[in-house]
Amino acid sequence: MGKESQNRLEHFAALKSKYQVTQYGDSLPASLLYLILRKLDLGIELLDLESNWLGESRLEETLEAIKQEQKYKVQEFGNLEFEFSKLKSKYKATSYNGSWESSHLYFILLKLESGNFLTDLEVKWLRANGLYETNKIAQEVKLFSQLKSKYKATQYQDSYPDSLLYQILKKLELTESLSNSEYNWLINNELFETAEFFQQQESVKEADFAQLRDKYQANRNSDLSLSSPLYLILQNIDANKNLGESEIKWLEQQGLSETIFIAQELKETREFAALRVKYKVTHYEDVSPKNHLYKVLKRLDLSNQLGEQDINFLKKRKLSKTIEIANNKYANSLKLNIESGENLNEIEIEWLKNNGREDIIALAQQKHFAALKSKYDVLHYQDKSHTSLLYTILQKLELKERLEATDVAWLQETKIEEPQATYSYYRWQQEPQYQGNKLFSGKIRITYHTIEANFYQQEFQRTDNKWNLANASSHWRKADEPKQALQLTNNLQFDKIKENKLKSALLTTRGGAFRDVGKLDEAENCARKAIEYQPKSHHPYTLMGAICFERHQYSDGEYWFQEAIKRGANPRDMDSEIKRVVKNTKDENKRRQVINYLLNKDPQRYAWAKSYIKNSNNKI
Image (cartoon, rainbow, N blue to C red; front, side, top):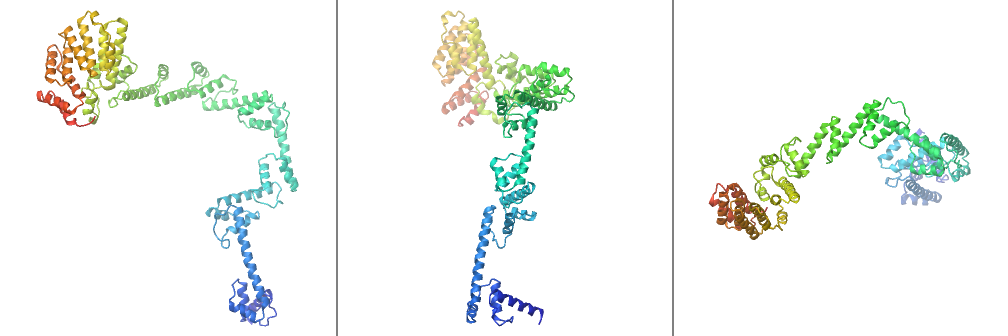
């Protein structure tokens, strides 16, 4: 008989014994019973034909054994699945949906349950499957096991991190005190060696507490327990930590003023050391915070500038690097202020000059110049240098100072180099006095005339000279404030004014203000009275011409303008008045009417009116 046949016979005999059919005489490997028992042992369900054969062969016990075996396997299968589900819940792995039969997870979780460490490969498997919480618990299990070994608690079987023992061992690792209930728990669980570790730690801390009380003069306190707030406070002092307000208050309540003094001195010593490093005080031997240098460096650290006495103190001790740092700090603070839009005052400018920081002064002036150009709508003026005459003029205007005649002349002659798109009709609409693209327009012009108006108004109040009143009224008009001009001349008693020239000037400027606000009848009355007082002055005639053009009485207006020119008026002033009329005419038909009149009269002289024809349908 061959080896294989012998093995099969032995296998058949073992199966017959297992399934209680030893009385069955046929032991040949080709037996039907051998086939059935082999299928059963492999967990393969029997066919009806095979079950019937067992009954016919009077193998009822075998059939019952088969049923019991199958029932056991089904039950055991369910048990395994249930245990797997419990382990997944316990170790935070419920997100995993794989089968317990073919997954590594069952084995890994059971390994954790038994307190064994995971291999690197198993840890990687958990991470790869997104089981980060499970991996975290595994690390806690590992730490728990290590702590149990370190603190002689290996006889305790539970390895899950929610164990009270784990919390106790972590406290021991941090040398934290245990509560009475925690200590009693160790004793009740016969973890005497672990409890001994705690007692040793407490003894060491008690000795440390006693040493700290001596060191920081805190023996006056009667509470010697390790749970006393004093122990933690003294530990903080010894660890070079600054005390909080609550800690200082507690010490004050306990009357431990010496401890507070020592803590404060240590704090200042640490601060002094840090400040010496920060401000390059390398060769200064006195490290006591009682030294005046500490106060100087602290002031420097809290502010951006040292006073003259502090600087002299540093100079005497040859602390040039510290002075340099202090100066740079202050200079940088001024620079930051400039960047945020602040201006330098005279003291700051003087300091910068004395310390060779003209670059910051220049920066401040450039920033200020740019801000003023923006405020006065002259950003497109190309010269950005703070040495520009425009910067000087804008500073004067900002300070409400009067301009020199040369300043005004320069503004009237200097052009703004600006993209062509920003001009044309819009500028003419907004600026009736605008001549080309000169600087003397817009806000600069209005601010200048406002300053002049206020000056002459104050001069009138000071001197009662009514020529100042005429000048103030004229400037208020040019500052686009005709109501101010009218208010100034409201209550004039012309019968008490002796000089006809002055009367004419006051009436002319008052009439101009009435024209500005659209009261043409009142304006005409003023103009005619002004002519009566001084028929040789061209100003009231010019006013009459402008009034007639406002009323679209063009031939009458031409007459008055010609009379004004006979008396010395400049024809260009007449054109300016006519331009203003065109600009102020809101009715499109009437505007086109006056434009056609001008172009028919003199197309070359009034060529500027063509732009109004081109844009007359545009809404401005």
